[in-house]
View 1 (tube, rainbow, N blue to C red):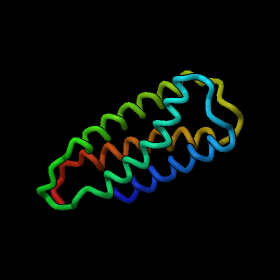
View 2 (view 1 turned 120 degrees about the horizontal axis):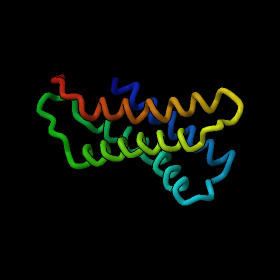
View 3 (view 1 turned 180 degrees about the horizontal axis):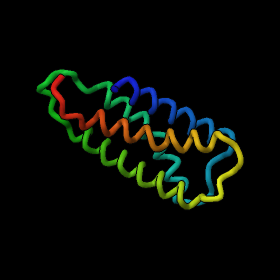
View 4 (view 1 turned 120 degrees about the vertical axis):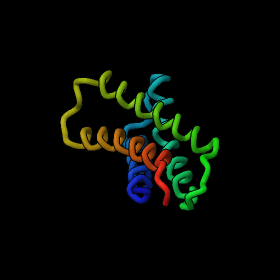
Length: 118
């Protein structure tokens, strides 16, 4: 599950980066902040997931909690963006991107707050 979360986060970062290169930065402030969060949070999530120890006594740090809160915020903003941009452009890439935007934070949250002993 850790590998899947890291791969999804890196794919999301790469996809957002390519979107910025192709389309440019958005002009509205809310979308600029959302884009920056979607660009940098996957890197932070992947780093925190890879940094976490696999021992049973691993305590969650404040960075784990902050990353979790930011992933919940990204998930909420993704739902907001999907609803506010309703007439979607033609093509299948929008659906794949939206799916990746939803799956990456959910997988990160599951891995970050998995209570099982390893």
